[in-house]
Image 1 (tube, helix red, strand yellow):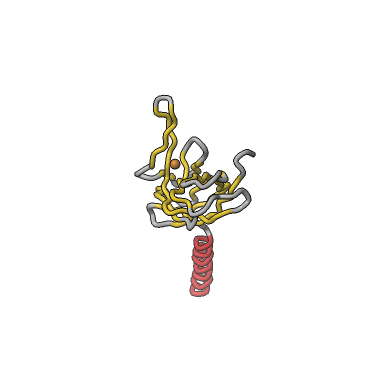
Image 2: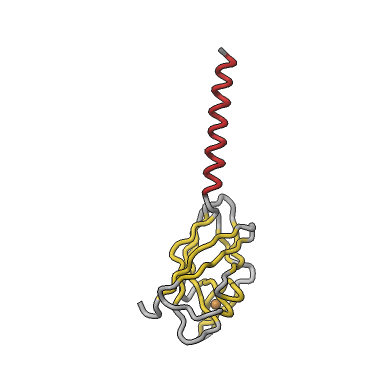
Length: 150
Ligand SMILES: [Cu+2]
């Protein structure tokens, strides 16, 4: 009687472990939504991408850069006022993404800078962007190119 109880118990535990392992395997550490960039006029060198990034992790992380076939270099930048002009500079320490929180990259704020574009960005197309984190996590997203005016 006692043995049967233990056996049933360990089966339940095994199922629980399997379920949580499966869940973890499917769950990405981050969710990226609304990733977009403006179409570029002429033949530009650079462009910026914006997105909403949500942490599904229970530990803090830092967005430090990325990779895209669309550009030579990916940096994380911030726009800020310097006297009368808006300037942008790289965030050398990256962008903190606290556990479970959402950060929004948007025009006139923090953005993903695409340096050395390989081709002009045309409205309606999209390109792949991989975000790199301090923890080693890598998250891919499709960036939608939107018209200059919309
Ligand atoms: Cu920039």
